[in-house]
Amino acid sequence: MNFKKLIFWVTKTAERYFPDRQLYFRTNGDVRFITISKKLQIFSSAVAACLVIWFSVASYNYVYVNEILGNKDTEVSNANRNYDELENQYSELKNDIQKSTVALEQRQKYIQQILEEEEILDTNIPSDATEFDDSTITDDDYDGDDKEARNNIRDQSLDKIYVALKRIEMQQNKTVKSITDKVDVKLSFLKETLDKAGITEKTMLSLAKKLPSSTAQGGPLIELKNGINGVSLNSTTFDQLYEKRNSLNDLEMAIQYLPVITPPEKYYISSKFGVRRDPLTKKWATHKGVDMAGWHKTPINASGEGLVKKAGRNGSFGLFVEIDHGNGFRTKYGHLSKVNVKRGDVVTAGQLIGLMGSTGRSMSTHLHYEIWFNGKPIDPLKVFKAAKDVQKIKQQEYTS
Image (cartoon, rainbow, N blue to C red; front, side, top):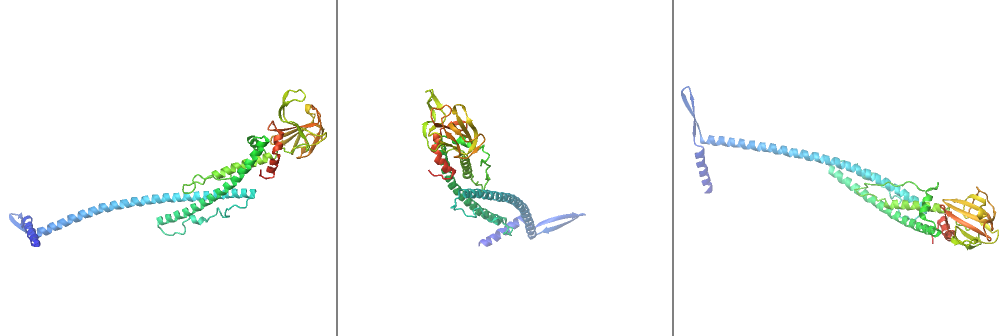
């Protein structure tokens, strides 16, 4: 029923809009006409409508496709640009890895050097701690054209290397921490010994730097500012260890010059270092050494190795010997009854340099003994007190 109504409506509409039409032509007084039927009008209109639709669709597709192609070109250009940036970043990361590897290898050599010097055998460090296959940072095994797949392979490779290098760094830092703890123990013992002897660590270090055999040298490590994947390799523990070992080496070297041998083997202290009443004037005066009383002609030995600067009579000191031990240390021996060395002699520690007496400004047989450090007198009794610890340090026996 509805279909018949539709046909009826179409027929009526066609009769209304497409009635038979006649076209008249007049030529030389003759009139002709052509009748355009309803079917021809409908067919022509349909063809015209199809042409309009086709043109509209074709034009739209042309514009749309060009826009799509333009967007694709932009995407390809951006992708190429991003790929170039990734290539540059990859190259930079490879360089960072190589620099990191060099730094870790140098650190490992430094650690090994310390371990050998300290004769530490239990290191818990693998022998190949800083070795890995360089082929893991290439993509030579990938032959495809898929750049994303290649980048994924590279990322996985770099992640593995990053983990491996960080593991090595952590192991090295752990070892360095252990070594630093041992160095701290030695430094603490050495500083306590210097304090006991009345010598300041700062002055000792400043004089040690001037010694020709000073171990001070430039830093052995490469500082990495970029590191790997934006994570820097921390050199703080290595820097601390290096500074502390330099201080330890300098102090160990400097303390070798400290004269610790007691000049006479048998004696008693008749007058101490510092302010005292002068035995002759009975006035208060500064006593720059100690008086060590004993038997006449008791052997007097050099407190340490050194160069004799003075030997002979020296005013109120009587027969007198002065020895330069180096690194700011000097010792003076007064009131001797006999001098067994001469100026310019090189003496060894414990070598006989004279005999106890009472020459010069003296009331009885004794040795006036002074120790000078960096141009100032220090208390010999403090040095005697620290002598055993100094000997331990010289023999690398850091025990209380």
